Image 1 (cartoon, rainbow, N blue to C red):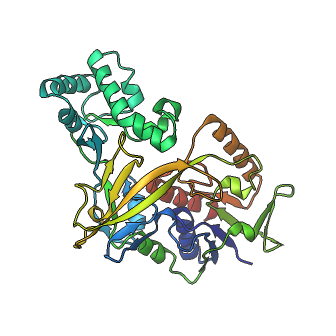
Image 2 (cartoon, rainbow, N blue to C red):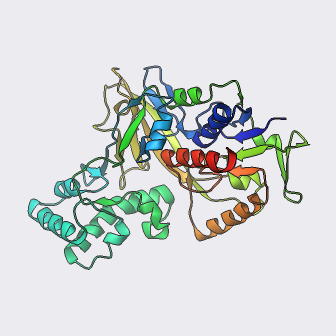
Image 3 (cartoon, rainbow, N blue to C red):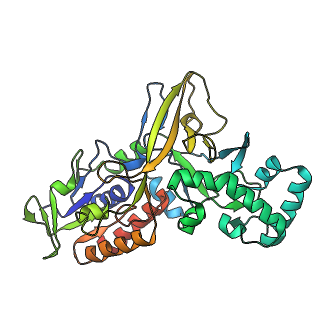
Length: 382
């Protein structure tokens, strides 16, 4: 009998499969529904040789040295620091909104007044969520906050989530704060980059072990059954007494017993352009214009000399279970109540471990999920 079954070949499942195989020397069956490993981090080269992120841009950034060091066992890094612009009133301004953005938008004299007040109220280098900035009583700061809210947050948030910023969980808008600095980088983490040869090569190296057997294009739930009465797990009709590590949607695992969990999905439109570069930086957001939220040009992330370029337009959309890709958990009070029921049910299975964005219904960045998987290995498996 196989001692470990891992469902899902994204970062959560791959890290745990790698640790079990290499550190414990145990056999692992890794089951993946898609026809490739890597989850949403999967990338490939276009016929022009451009490295394309199939499910949207993935930029690695972390302050966790142990995570950076762990992944460095499987890759060299292209030291890339992401910069994002937003198309606002005919200008491309740095995002997150910072002091440089301020001077591009407002007349110099007014920008100077606003800069001084921001530093006095919050201090230089601070990150301020937009909803917090809007509560400030100073009339000039309030003017600025309303401008940023209307021009940058409202349109983008409504396209991305179908709701206004104040209608969604505050942690979502806090992910893109206002920076009281002149740092134009999108992330300020100590370690930033992308794998030199791409993410797919990293995953292949991590899973290169005879103890790991991979089943692609296989729906694990066709092979597994969880009996919620006996709290036993069955694999191919026989009781499975090993450890099941599940990284897929928790509601799907329990056959939507308490109803489906809400997500937002994306329609991704790739275009090949007959010019060397299409835009001035890797990503430009369009909060107020067009139906897409942003355009990413991959040559800025993985530089290569070609006469053509590939861009990606992202169109947010509603999510239908078993039809669309669940990109972003939709954190409503009702959703969290549903998730807590699934979580409580899962905890009744002694040999079931849930890890990952879909299984834990939580927004994880890549470094967070690698860290989480390493911790789960140390605390629950090793």
